[in-house]
Amino acid sequence: MARSKVTVADLRAKKERGEKLTRVTAYDYPTALLADRVGFDMILVGDSLGMVVLGYENTLPVTMEEMLHHAKAVSRGTKACFLLGDMPFMSYQASVEEAVRNAGRFLKEAGMDGVKIEGGQEVVPVVEAVVRAGIPVSGHIGLTPQSAVKVSGFKVRGKDVQAARKLVEDAKALEAAGCFLITLEAVPDRLAKLITEQLSIPTMGVGAGPWCDGQSLNLYDVVGLFERFTPKFAKRYANLAVEMEKALTQYKTEVESGAFPTRENFFIMSDEAHAGLIAALREGA
Image (tube, rainbow, N blue to C red; front, side, top):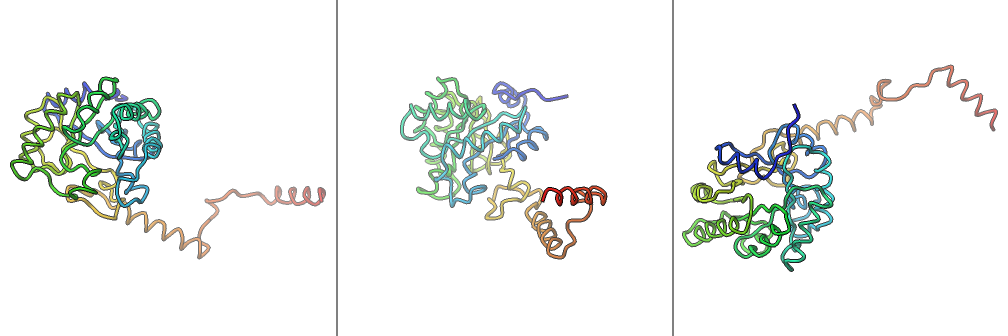
């Protein structure tokens, strides 16, 4: 039986029942199709596509148009997963009005069900405005890649008392602002547990330990398709890059040797049809 569409209420109900939420990051139609078929609760169309798919050095160059392009593809590949569009750098920082407009584009143009916004108390006015516009918002605190690139690097957050206190305050402020879920990235496990217990909305862990309400990984890391680097928190369940390289090497070799194509790989014209075609072409000449 086909699954029904996952909603914000469904995600919250799973937290209340103590059931783990599942999410993968995907960027295109075929991977979204697989994730939806497997039965994940959520798919995040992350701005990490800048590095994983587009080859940028970091996420900062990613534009709204690039995000929307990939979000549309993911939307076409899913029926049940809750779809989350990642607000890229400078799509929400310039003004509240621009943030609402860009968030709306994710739903109106790309078929997303909500958006993810990085930051803590400093983005509360943006979150409140987007929520008022009727757009579900997921928060993201801890390691926030958009700011980590230029400010403090890709490091664990909340290791001292002051930093831990700020993360707790950020999480509570985002919940009060209307977030339906908060991603905790690179947060120490016991701190993530504390935050999770103090919120009524679900938390999604990215390298934040087992006590979050759910876990999120990049699909390309899970299946071994992104080889540039592997985050500490990722787990590779397959190594498709190696298998794909083997397949491509074999194809290239067979073309060069003449082993490909065989009769099974092309359309064959009968001798009779060939003779008739040649005759017709000669008459036309």
